[in-house]
Length: 409
Ligand SMILES: Cc1cc2nc3c(=O)[nH]c(=O)nc-3n(C[C@H](O)[C@H](O)[C@H](O)COP(=O)(O)OP(=O)(O)OC[C@H]3O[C@@H](n4cnc5c(N)ncnc54)[C@H](O)[C@@H]3O)c2cc1C
Image (cartoon, rainbow, N blue to C red; front, side, top):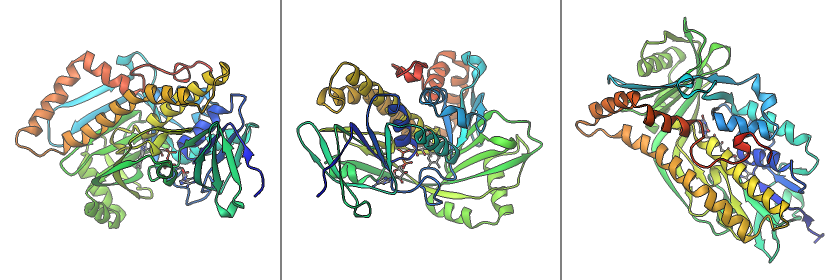
């Protein structure tokens, strides 16, 4: 067998999170390999598809810091207000950028546009070598390195690195090969996603989150005055909704959301995503770190998955940068322990918050509906509670990385 190709960091998975890490590490004097199974421009690319991503304020700052915001800025729609309500109940809550003293709470961007921007940035990064299509197998830990085998289609060569990063999604087989167990709990819901115009609606910068007994409906402002919808329903209801013709589906959406904004018209293409909570039991193994959906796959109700994954990226890039600068080992036990320690709280809080929302609004127990309505109303009047939630939504709760503070890595 030919000699192994040597790198400092090998990343498995060049989706939203893996490509973001490669862009971040490109600022460091490191040899980085990025191994991605599906080319970015392929219609089958699972990370850069029809979904849209609500980026938190801190994600926008991180993307700027890794050189990927410039390309998407013109395609991104700002969110200045978030309106949370429950169908048939009086209470509602509003978080606004103005109240929080910021210009925007976040932005909405198509994942395809974000993927194209990240990969364009990688094309201009001399320290990053891309293997695509490709995938890695059989990780073997040696004392100062970890070796993996590129799949047969790529001649079965070996890649050797000081750090292997697993960023290949919620169903990662590499994570399993490293001995990291994961749990999966289905939400018994499928998200139906698409975009729509609303006749007569003013130019939009408000995101709506509307809960109902059947599941949540999110409506996000999108470009050209359109809105993106994420409608979560039990799997059979989602299949039925997908089978409806456009006029009947528009009625279903209108019924779920109400008429406060106007009439729903001009439906775009619909796509479906089964929803579950996937949690890796560890986010490190010897010479390996797990990030993004490979570490935690969330329900999209609160739009937190990529935002959380990007904070994994900013933290891992920072501990690697610190190790490189101090002459320490970027894949050594101390670096990995620091990464795990710094991520624990944020991951636990966001998983708990997202899962808690689904449970709270899914409860049909007597008295729960009015209690939730009153809760939303009360919450709207409590500036302290609102500020805490707003800081979570903006990705600004807890200790912040240099990239999230707008500083160089
Ligand atoms: C309907 C919906 C709406 C969402 N909305 C939001 C939102 O508003 N805000 C938000 O923050 N998040 C949102 N998310 C979550 C977000 O999409 C994910 O958190 C994000 O895609 C995770 O990125 P990732 O790169 O970790 O994993 P993935 O997106 O799963 O990408 C994994 C990558 O690894 C590649 N891969 C897989 N196996 C291999 C292998 N063996 N070898 C090499 N490569 C491999 C895949 O081809 C892919 O490119 C939403 C999700 C859904 C389903």
